[in-house]
Image 1 (tube, rainbow, N blue to C red):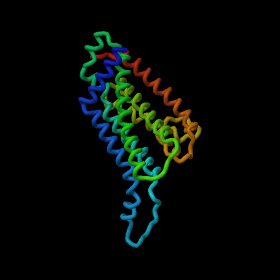
Image 2 (cartoon, helix red, strand yellow):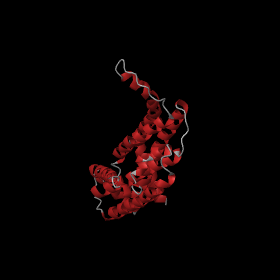
Image 3 (tube, rainbow, N blue to C red):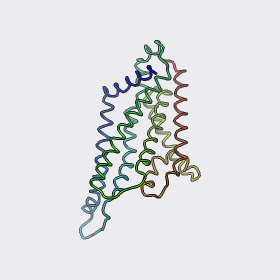
Image 4 (tube, one colour):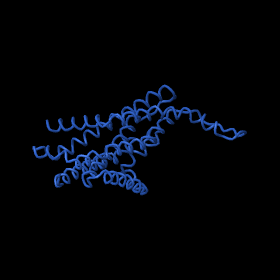
Length: 253
């Protein structure tokens, strides 16, 4: 346990020294402010872009418009996060910085799990910054209360954790940033393709990132997401175990 805490602390400090935490926090804060502001000014912006003589009546902006922007932009933020952290394993392998620690008896499982924990921690911090900022600005700028806000946010957060587990596996298997990004992108693409099959849609983890607004509009119920949450948790466990086993067999120069 001490080794895990020490390694996780090392990973967290490294994310601060390399400005990864700062980049994630700043980007997520910026998007958090832009979500409700964009929703607020969008009707006026569209009206100003219409040709003269054409009058279009647009609905007043509502809280739901802000959260639509939140989940739309969160996909971009997740991609940014994956790009920033894609070298968390390949970087160590290329520099050979793990050799000394491993020869001193540090478990390889601790190395992978600490990197996963640190990445999830930074993802959670960034996500909470964006969510909290969007929530506060929406409350101030736009009227209306929505159901299932916390659960909807949890679903998107869990999808991000799933992507982090895939990213780590890609880094372990390929030993390169490109391999990590390719596996993560390929996995996301595969989920989108599977979503075409109606019978699999309820079990597809992709629902966690695409069905959030339907929870806020009461078009979907919390129970509709239980299957996809369970599948996501199983996949996270599978990817982590595969990462452990693959890293155990990997030759570290």
